[in-house]
Length: 378
Image (cartoon, rainbow, N blue to C red; front, side):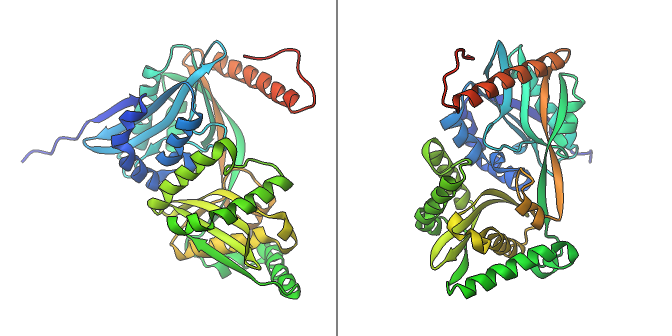
């Protein structure tokens, strides 16, 4: 008998959200294996698009037979005198990459085919602005060596992670490097006991319980933002999209919430998303009323202990080398901003994006002051 013929790689670009409906389960299953952040999940990516997206959807998908083995979650929108291609979720702390099945025979070949499909489907005058891209993801190697694209990468961020493989909470906290962290945790417990308050931790991983504690999470989030405004993903224009995406993840058992209570009140919470044996930190806040008791570190300990119990191997703490993350991390990876354009115009495209970004940032700074600028940028 002859060898069974290999199934060809079929790649297309989807521009109509309705055409993605038959792929959602397969996309979610692929994201469980290889997602690099919340916008790798279809629930987050498409909720962002429905509520905040503009321009044209540009999702490249690769199949072998009936199996989805690769996907690029992108969109294209007008920008200056041309167009720009960005991740779905741009502007909300996106960490992107090509989603390629781990058992694909040649991940770079799949990623290269995805980038070629995007080049074929994109507008003639187009720039890439991928903020941010995981440096060690296979799709970046394929993009940087691709004939259709001329890109450059700027090292932007370090992402702290906790490698939990083969360890326990006690082992993680052992050693000289974690001495200050152990002291912080011990002091917090001692001070709580001395103050005569009761405290506890709680893990939520089902939708019904999440809905029940949501008002308490809202209150803690509101208090955190009132003291130090960052980005309130459970208020205003972001609330509906965030909650719809989270509910979809809870239904697929992909979301976990850790909470700290003091005298029965939620004072800290961490919402994370699970992709296979990885956990990605998404929203982490604490009520400043409990700051003296280091609620963030008590929260991290509860979350790490629960992750170990679930067989999580890597806890990705998310973009930003915040001091509290570094105290828990034992490893990291790098993220880059990818800019460029079609071959021969990549440098020009990247420069154009940089100039426009500079003008938009200047306008944002002016508009946040008590003055009105005398000019505007379209």
